[in-house]
Every structure is written in C-alpha cells, then in structure tokens.
Amino acid sequence: MSIGRRLGAVATARTVTAVVRAVLEEHAPGGQQRWLRTNHRGEPVSMLEGPAVAAGLVAGAVVAAPSARAAGAVGIATAAGAAFGIVDDLAEDLDDRRKGLRGHLGALAQGRVTTGGLKVLGIGAGALLAAAVATPRTGDDGIRRGLVGWGTDVAVSGALIASTANLLNLLDLRPGRALKAATIAAVPMVLAPGAGGPAAAAIVGASAAAADQDLAETDMLGDGGANALGAALGSALVLGAPRAVRLAALAATVGLTVVSEKVSFTAVIEATPVLRDIDRWGRRPVHAPAPSA
Image 1 (cartoon, rainbow, N blue to C red):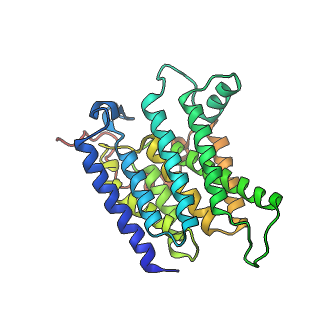
Image 2 (spheres, one colour):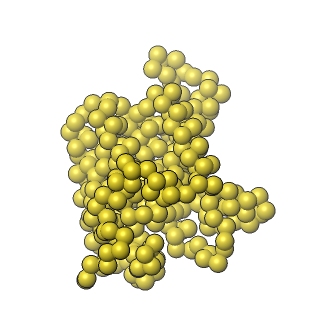
Image 3 (cartoon, one colour):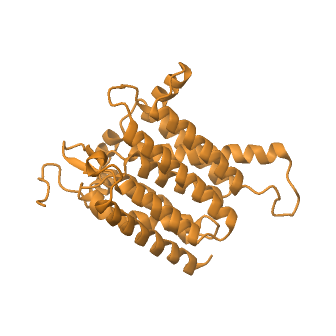
C-alpha cells in the first residue's frame, strides 16, 4: 500500500472539487438558475456541487491510480455516472410521475425512454465497460482465463458498480447523507492494501471539499454527483476487494435498492438512534432558518 499515493488522491480530489465549484459559480453552463432546485425545506439549492465532485473524483483517482487499468476503470465509471446523472438532473420531465428504478424500467419495457431510463442504460453500459477494463484476462497465477469465467466476473463487477451508483443516489435525500455514507464506506479501503485504495481516497477528498456547502444546504449533489460518487465507490470495490466481498456488496446494494421501493430510508434512519445522530451531524436543526447571505 502506498500511503503517499492515497494522500495524493485525497489532496487532488479535494483541490479539484473546490476549484471546479468556484469556477462554476462564475461560469455555470446555462446560467445559475438552470442548476437550482428546491430542497426538502422548500429552499433553493444548487446542483453545481455534482459536476465539481465528479471532476474531483476523476482527477484524484486517475492521478493516483496504481495502473492504467485502474485509472481507466474508475474514470469510465465515474464519468458515466456524472454525465447521465446530469442529463437526468437538467432534462427530467417534472410532470412524469414515474419514479425509482422500477418506474423507469417499466417505461423502457413500454418502449418509452425517460431521462431516468436513459440514465439506467448509460450508467449500466459505463459500469460494464469499466468492469471489463478492471478485470484482467490473466489471473494472478499467470494463466489466461476462459471467456465465460472472465465474462461472469465482468458481469458481477459491472452490476456492483451500477447498483452502488444507484444506491448512493437513493441516499441523497438529506444534506450530507450521501457524502457521509460514501466516506464511511471508503475509509476502510483507503487503509487497506489493494488497487482500489486511491479511488477510495479520492472519495474522501471530494466529499470533504463538498461537505460544508452540502451541510449548509446551499448545494446538493443531484443525480450527477451522487451517481458519480456511487460509481467511484463501486469501482474501488471492484479494484480492491476479493470476490467474496464483491458478491456480498452486490447482494447488499441490490437488496437495499429493492427494499427502497417499499420502505423509506429516511424513516428508517430517523427511527434508529445511531443512524439518526450520524445523519444529523453537521446539519442545520430541522426548524432553523437558512443563514443570511
């Protein structure tokens, strides 16, 4: 494990996230209003955090990657998550009542492509491509693997990247929640050996840069930032975790996604003292007014 490489990923991701966010404040594509949404309090909040975090994630993970294979995998997955998430953020039909993975897949089954459905297809394709790049045909023993075995690993890893991208987006319903969840999941990988460490470190750095404005409720990740964050986390797992861990992570992310169709994550968090305390840490109290400009 290269401590210097991981520290470099943290510093690069944090710096790039902060710089890109500052640039977007002055030069927002389409103007600031295009990126404004109304949050859970009914207050305006900017989604420009999303592309800034995505840029920081890609920069930190690629600069510190231990190999071209690792850099390519994280870069592809994160960029796909950001690009298709931003399309959904900016072009979503707000009158369309279809929500959640089931709603968008249902629309696709009927031959209708929503921006959410396009996001599912795009992130899924990016995840599979990233998994193919991340998964070598030659094993640690130097023996070239068969196409079926390699393809199975690619399919599992691609599903893990895509499902993690979706799960982080499902968590992005309250200030700081997705950033905290991603950081908590990433820290063990930063401290452990493995090719996924730099990508996990980039998650820590980008999240740290975005945390203040996210918790202050002036910025939010949006689909672009949350999907990018989840895709980077899934890529770190694919690159650094053994097969048993990846299978367990895939089962957990898919299980939570299925549960989310029926159960509110916010309700569960509010009913669980430890989770509620972590979720509220750093946030404005429920009835506190917005800080004056």
